[in-house]
Image 1: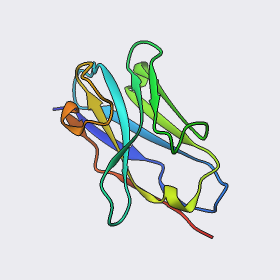
Image 2: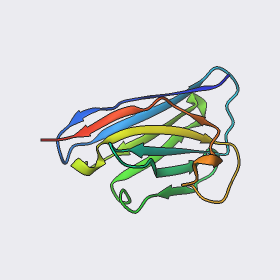
Image 3: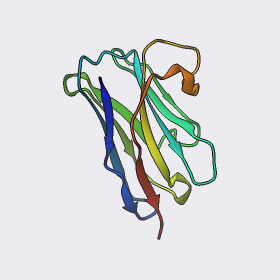
Length: 125
């Protein structure tokens, strides 16, 4: 059974950078794509970024476009989220999820089949 495990979260200052990783283990892993979501306290979970496993297509939420970069290394079964110019409103638990098919919208959670346990990112001075 494939499992996703996020790492790299922490407490940083506004303006700092952080890189999250999401590693898949436990079996053959060939998703159509991967997504990063986040959920702030008291808010609904929202999509942050997405990437095709094979190919160049990426997606970014408006709130992170130009600051965050999603990438993947299929050889390592790992997807990354480079987060730059972090702001206090980026504070949230960040989740990665695998997407088995093209689907219709990156933001639709029911189009993802596996989720990690989440990693906390706190941006505060």
